[in-house]
Image 1 (cartoon, each protein chain N blue to C red):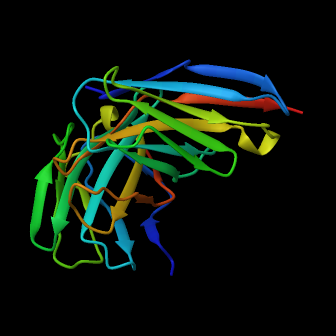
Image 2: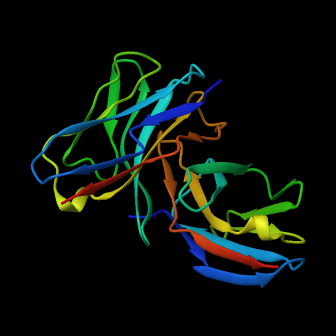
Length: 110
Length: 115
């Protein structure tokens, strides 16, 4: 079964707008990671946030983590058409497995 | 570095045939894993390895075998292909284990169709 569940399943926005996607998980984690997948390609790592961190930034990406609610959010600011992709959260519980959610499909229109 | 490479990119099999999906990495990563990706299901872990000679099952191991004789290579074998194994298969690796956590590097995937 999936550890992480992303919300929404699909998101459609205009260039320049912000995109927010959420991830909820079920068990305690060591860290949570976000990945991007362009159509037909492998996944690319975006950002890793550890369980003792609450917020992390990388360029136009901002990730938050609330371990009390077992949830995380990924914010992409000033979206571009090139941000069109599927985004996955993945939880690392420390048992040697990285478990992925079902993903959010983001469409950024020019 | 080439990173994580997978061959073939595409494969069509008939039910009952066997084949091996190849995966190699040149980053000296200890941990390697295989996932399958099906529409609406995200990625599901098939098998993983924490080092040469050590493998373990993931979430959906049935119908698949793995071995890890070297640090670089982690092949996935389909013993008797079934239509339910039609999927996109991704191999991934990461530096090593521990509570700190490391990002995973993914290969480009193998698209397998079983008829």
